[in-house]
Structures are given as C-alpha cells and as structure tokens.
Image 1 (cartoon, helix red, strand yellow):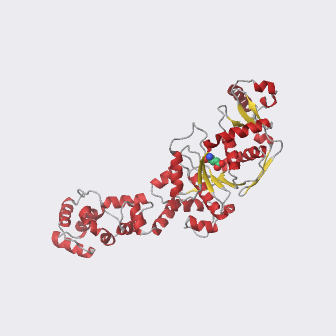
Image 2: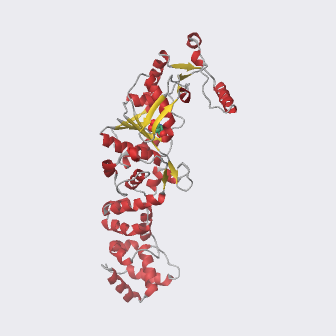
Image 3: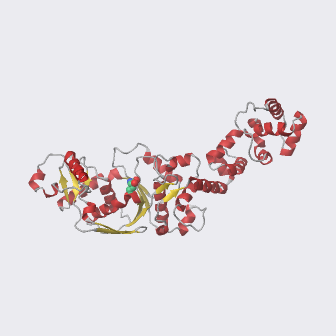
Length: 432
Ligand code: GLU
C-alpha cells in the first residue's frame, strides 16, 4: 500500500502534486493500492475546504486512489499507543514548562550547541508522575542505537540517538505531533513505500524509531524527492511564486496532462519529451530521478502545454473554451501558434465575439464595413466575402483589410483571415 499524505493547510504546491503523481505511477507499477491521508491533526494550521480542493485536484489529474482517510479520525489510536509506550517505559510524561524549555533552548544557542531535551522528566520517580496534575506532553525516549535506513534515491543514512533526541509525540492537549501520527498511521495501513519531499528526510529516523518502539519491524521503502527551485532566484519555489500553486496553473489554462508531463520530466531523462502519465507508467524508474534540486522552468511548461493542446481533439478543446463546436476547436488550434495556455486562446476567441464600436484611424471605413456585413447574405468562402464587400463598399487595400480584420477578430493582427473565416462564418451575425 502506498499513500499520499497532504496537509490541508494551503494551496496544493507543485512539489506535492509531483509527490502525488509519483505515488500514482508507483502504485500502478507495483500493483498496490494508493490511499490519500489528509493530515489534519494540526487544527490551527488547517484551512477549511482545502481538503476538498486537494481531492478535486487529484481527480483532475486522474490520480487513482482507493480510499481517503482523515488522520484526525485516528487520534484514539495515537493516544492508545502512546499509553503503551509509557507502560513499556519507552515514552514518558514531560511536565517541563514552555518557559523552562525556552530557557534551555536559548542557553544551547548561546553556547553554540544544537538544542536537545535535557531528559529531566525521563528520570522522575513514578510517585512524582502519578498524582502530578500539571499539564504534560508525552515524549518518546531517544533510541539506544543509531537508526539507519536507505533512501532509494539518496542512499544510506545513519542517525545517532543524539540526532533524534527525546521528542514530543503527544502535545499537552493530547493531540499527536506530526511525526508520531504519521509513523503510527503508516504502520496501521501497512504502508510499503513512502514517497515524499526531501524536507521530510530528517523526520524519517524519528518515524522509524517510533515504529520500532511500538514493536513494528516491517521495513518501509523511502524515496525523498529533491525540492523544486525557482529557475531565476535559485530558491525553493514558495507561495510567493504563483506557479508553485497547482490551482493557479490550472486557472491559468495549463492542462493537467501537460503539468503532469512536466512534473514527471523534471530532473528525469525520459525516452520522449511529450508523454502521458499512462505512458510514463511503462518506462518510469523512480530511482533514476536526478538527486539535484529540480529547476522549475515555466517556458518549458508552456511549450509542453502547447504540445498537449495540439493533441486534444477539437470538440474537447472547444468545450474547454466554453463552446461545443468542432469549428471553434479548429480555430483554437490555429491560435496555438501565438498562445501558451487555454486562457490565452480563450482571450483570442473572446475578442472575436467582443463588442467592436470603432477602429482608430479607420472610423468611417469600419462603420461602412460593419453595415455591409450586417446586411450581407450568408457567404461561404473568404474570397467570395472579399469580393462582396469590395463591390458593396468600394473599400480597398488597408482600408478594407484593417477594418475587416478588426470586425472579424477584435484585433488588428493575427493569423490569416482566410483560415479564420471558414470557422466563424456561422457566427457572423453575432460577431458583427
Ligand atoms: N503532510 C506532509 C506534508 O504535506 C507530508 C507527510 C508525509 O508524506 O509523510 O508535507
């Protein structure tokens, strides 16, 4: 079983979508199920509705999952297992106040040492614990030996007990911390492979330690994906970068198929540059992803988007633009040459249907032409149309073509009118 475990705390990041896509691909390759676990135990960080938005995005990208779990529904198990750990003396109640902990933190900072818990409460006698009514957290005791694991991408890791520390697993309100809830839930669902961002790498030994303390010895395969950097600044793609939000990309008119293609391509050397996720399932090898951070190049994504738009059938393309007419799909394909996204194509099509009052420098000619077109019979071909207008209005050269282009497309430059006219002739009344 694989899992994708988003937190409903903000817009879905492209890095998270990449994690979701790789989980989808691997679940197909391994023929194992994929579950979605909404990590919602940190109530203060949760944003209402983000869970639904994430699930909608996963649907849009055809990520195939068998179940959606909410981590908060497992809190009873988290608490129960923490009690087990306390009974087995693998965890302890910690009554240290925030002030005391803060002081130790500052002291460590002043001494230039990394902060670690001083184990004060670990050695409290039972009598000092049982009737103690002060608020307390639960801490797991640091491991006795090093925790080692192999990441499929990054190789071997070896963490000392000091790296891991005696860390908090239940907060004062008895809600689980991230590492604890995650470790327990991966265990309860018998997760075989965890694919996630490399920002979680230092959490992995803690999660392994939690499961080992609970007596669970089934190994989980880990794959931590390199972060995605902003091409220009070289910094991690963050909320400041619009393109880091999957919702923004979709709203801008990037096709899910193109975004998925791009995210699989990032840091990978595929047999072909343009592909579908279905095709990637055939050849993708997650261990061959580059270990170096990936650089997000929007120009490349735009190129891939155009290629995918070219591949869509005309009826579907027209529906994406708000029509249900193959001719409008064909028209959209003409505009691909000068557009990168569905939104940009839609702007071109909207301009065709926009209200056109006058055209600077051609005011008179435009009115004449408009009047002529309003009274024209249905004309099939563009040459015929030109002949008809010339005969009726006596307009020639630029005086004919500028107003005609403007009347038909709402702008004064663009693709050949002879290509456009046959596709819009049925809408002429509306357009003029
Ligand atoms: N909820 C974590 C996040 O959104 C992911 C945790 C995990 O995959 O283990 O970053």
